[in-house]
Amino acid sequence: MALTPAGNLFVSAPADERVIKLDVTAAPSLSFVTTAVGSTSTDSPQTVTVTNEGNASLDFSRLQIPTDFPLASSGAGVCRSSTMLGANTSCTLPINFTPTVTTLLSERITLTNNSLNLRPENLGPLNGPQPLGAPNSTSQSILLNGTGIAPTITFSSPVSTTLTSGKVGVSYSGASFTATGGAGPYTYSGTVPAGLTLSSSGSLSGTPTTVVTTLGELF
Image (cartoon, rainbow, N blue to C red; front, top):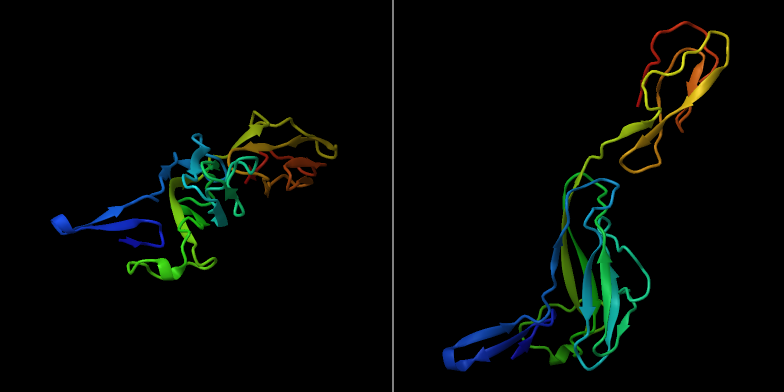
């Protein structure tokens, strides 16, 4: 019999000359729908429940959360890096997918705890190097997958691309541009007629100095 740092048990079966692996710590893997960068997927959050089925306290020493798969909540009942789960109790990991880049993403949440409840000298010969931290610590990882795509950004205001006409030498009443899609805050820039200015917040104002038939382009 041997126990790995991951908490899996290997038992020999002499009768048929084989070794049986009792995989008791296999964590789930989650897949999320394709989502625009800066947005949260429509199937978020997906929740994983961590349960202590033993008869001793399960103490967490580290919880690593990847950038693109943050926890949706940090309230009561959510697993933390300092969680201490009593026997037959559980905590949850409500996971969001909020991509920051446009690519196929495969990341992991890693939880380190004392589930082995053993000193290094008690571990079997199949063990590799122990993780940092307590000598009886072990880690489990949840594989997370999702694809980030470029967001579609549109102008929601003004509704028409044809703005109210102005007059040379007369202060323009102004226009305010508002974009939607992607992740704010937005910064506006572009070419505008002489005498007018476009602020980075999307406000067009000033006093026209020449006659033009087109406003220009905004970015």
